[in-house]
Image 1 (tube, helix red, strand yellow):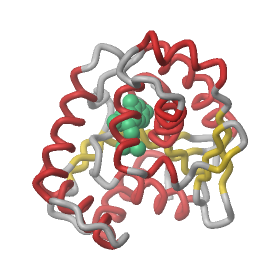
Image 2 (tube, rainbow, N blue to C red; image 1 turned 180 degrees about the horizontal axis):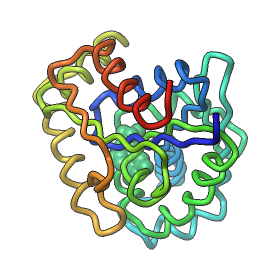
Image 3 (cartoon, rainbow, N blue to C red; image 1 turned 45 degrees about the vertical axis):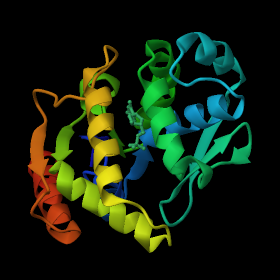
Length: 225
Ligand code: DC
């Protein structure tokens, strides 16, 4: 089969990463989680005591940030920040906010663009993010915009955190998600929006298996079985 790229965009908690990972495994493609890359930048800036919301504090630090990633046999994407494995550290709740803040800075987006495009040029990828279909891979063979109601997304995240042994507050999570949706879709630089040629998939009423089936059907229609 010829080279292909699949772009999956959508708001936080819509199930992008679980679905993109499962789809990539099914197709034998490489799963690329671009949110993890923004998280790594946010983590570095915060660790250095910088305010992730201030471009003047973030930009001077960019040259010191060397990000690499690799994929284990299980398809898990491991992230390295200047050689340190930060795969777990970037999942902390505070880092979500740092990532959202640094991602609003155009120079940060430009800094990460080549890295994302190179991965897509070298591999068949299922790439998940916010601007993959609109900015990073406008020529992607398949574009899916994955969404779900804010209530469903908050509930899913809440369950995930509970499963990790945390005791999160559902209302707070819902507020955080709604705030992040607003910030990600109202920023000037590459805001979250559905590409004109993207297929909309709303997973509010679907479980993971049903969502994967629907996603796979969309993909098959475009690139074959
Ligand atoms: O998918 P995630 O929650 O790990 O992403 C973290 C933040 O990074 C999110 O608030 C928006 C930003 N992001 C982005 O702006 N562009 C991407 N392609 C991926 C993530």
